[in-house]
Image 1 (cartoon, rainbow, N blue to C red):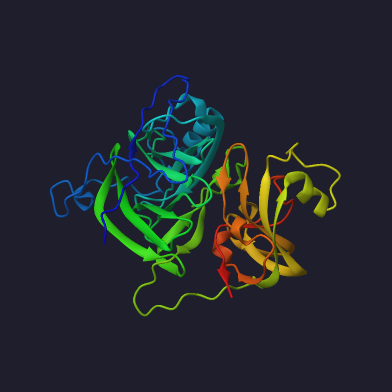
Image 2 (tube, rainbow, N blue to C red):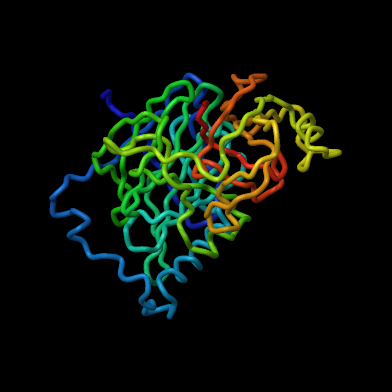
Length: 368
């Protein structure tokens, strides 16, 4: 197994509003540059198992009178209300759009999720900072970031996952044209995000019981924060334990249809809209899989605390290319009539007015 290129890079936080620091422009053929600041030695005196825990989330905080969960929710709301007070830095130049996403994931094993704040860039390899709140709502945030997103068609892809036990976070990295995914595990230790030294690779064609994919949401969608439940999307693609069968797609998520690459006005016209919902022009392009017939489709919903639900669907968005982000998934299949399967854990119904309006988007699929 070749050495993993970990994606832990240095960040800086400040107490007042600042301009976001630039990050690296990673093109389709440019590897993501990354730095690791610390690696855990198992069994050492600093092992997390020997450290004092964060306390029981059900216990009221001594100073605020709130439970750990409610104190964390209040602290996280303050971050989402003013995300610009935090800076993000990474190697080289990176153009930030001023948009942010967030996710919730328990990576300390105490039952209270951490907040992951993602700063969106024009190149869509986005730095993510981790915030953790103690029982009094006091925040800590490591001086490191992980990376989430996709560089361009055929380029680097990165994603974040957590463990089923909720005691660490994983950085995954792959390329859209290759099946091999590289994984590295990190733990939150006091005010540091450190590598555990665990690395491995897997084939992305089958789901994994060891990786639970973290899903990000727009910061104006406060449903996940109100629920204070991990925004995870089920098993990540790949890495089953030996002898473990991959779960079959469920909820009617196998369909026949045709892949079409359309501009935003063309897609709006296909859906019977007289205009694009957010003023998108022809610079916005989408790869959509249009079903031969409308079908019952199962996907996750942020309004349902991330749990899968079934709705009627006539198409699925596979990828999109916009002035602000690029995911080339499905573009190479333009015009092909196929039968595709989608695992509900890789699909989401929209919580906004993005195209295709009201239809699910899926980050992975299997060709039958």
